Length: 238
Length: 212
Image 1 (cartoon, rainbow over the protein chains, first blue to last red):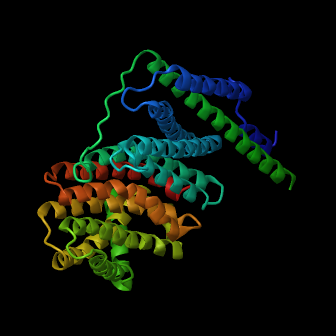
Image 2 (cartoon, rainbow over the protein chains, first blue to last red):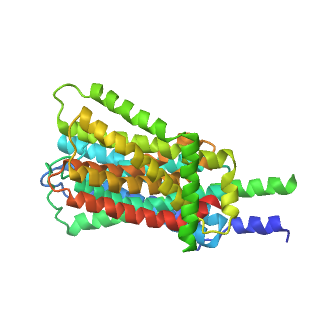
Image 3 (cartoon, rainbow over the protein chains, first blue to last red):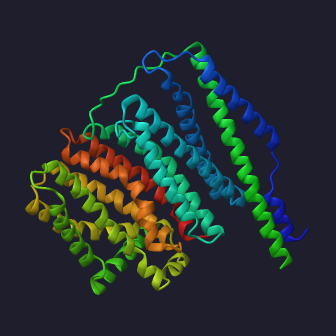
């Protein structure tokens, strides 16, 4: 096999679960989660109907963290093993993380408006942290797309993605201690009384979001790999 | 030991270059004083002293950004970086030396800027100065690293503020906390933690920024 052919084969990687199966699972789980959240779970005693957004807001936030962590892990794999596919996987994971991160900002903003009457609250740690992460990862895309494709772009992206996993805990800590001088804690939320249907609904929506993110990740990755393959073929023909 | 000697030689090169060309430091000095004047007019009369303390940190971060943007310009223009990467020394020495040089510029700018701030606005307490010193370390280590990344891109100077500011937010939080909070110790501790963590990450991964 020619070296180009070998490289083309490298671009592909077989997964144990096929993409349509993942997509169908995501659809089923999201439908189930919607059903549970809107029709089964009882209204929250304090916040009423609007509290239901919590099931999605929290599970989306967790999913975004998972995507960023996966992106950083793939970045590490890339730096370690020089695997060109790992760079692509890292990029796609960060991209999904940014999409879910924007959803966290939107759902959090809606929740804040309904619960406290403001679209934005600096006293909400999670929301502020996601704003910082949003800025950080949006800059990741600026960085990535201002370098020509190649090993250097892969390296710079990987290093920046690794910075992200250090930045997440550091920013979290920073935002926590910033309360000492920025805002006294005005709003205290009673810990949700977990149990029964509430726990079940939360778990289902969490799994649904993770599977959905994974399905989107696979779809995007398949597209990017197709692009790569096409480019490779063009180079072979040229 | 050779590592430290390499770092020393590289840092001396940058300082010598600045001493002869005087590109960066005068610009930083002028910029920071001009910023203070802008802030004076941006703050309405009877604004609290706390607001001025916060703006001090804005000035420091932007002044540092000015210096960091220039840090790798000589390397880029004269293609020195290729030569440096070829030399038989640890690549992280390039980052450490450049960080030390930018730190020297930033400290030199602050030696003028902090008294100017005290003159224009209000006096500074010890914890603010300690906070500035700790923040300088973080700004220069992370900023130099990102500066090396930015010069490798097409966008160059445009990109550095974009990738640097999100990472500088924790520094600003720690710094402002050290300036205005009642018990600055935890904020200073946080700044030290930030410096240590990010210095470690930069030191470990700089090689991948300058090599392919």
